[in-house]
Each structure stands twice: as C-alpha cells, then as structure tokens.
Length: 80
Image (cartoon, rainbow, N blue to C red; front, side, top):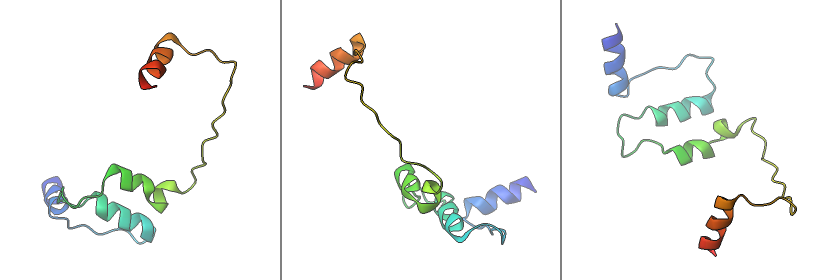
C-alpha cells in the first residue's frame, strides 16, 4: 500500500479531496511536482495567496535608546 502511494507521488499522480480549497490544491500540486527544475521554490510558496492568508504584517518598532549588542555594532561597522 505505502509503496504504491510513494510511487504515485513520485510520478506526480495524486487526487485531492473535495473539501480542499482550489488555491491550496494549486499550491500543493506545485509543491509535489516530481521535477525539481519545475517545482515551486520556497520564496514562491511564501508569496502564494494561501500561504499569506491570515498572516498579519509585522510591526517593526525602533527604539533609539536601545543599545546595540557588541556583535551587532561590529556588524554595522563592517557594513558601513
């Protein structure tokens, strides 16, 4: 049973259950692409509408009074 399942995935042969959303089906099809040259990249996965659904944009606050750690300060000096 498991051997047949693995071979099916290896050939890109799989069916989705009806309750799986169409956008998730498309994404999973691209993730399960057996050809590594055409398989979706991690960056593209993170850009997908399904992946972004429900995520909030991070809020970045800057505290001018916060002192840089010694390693951070060294890194900043090397960059600039």
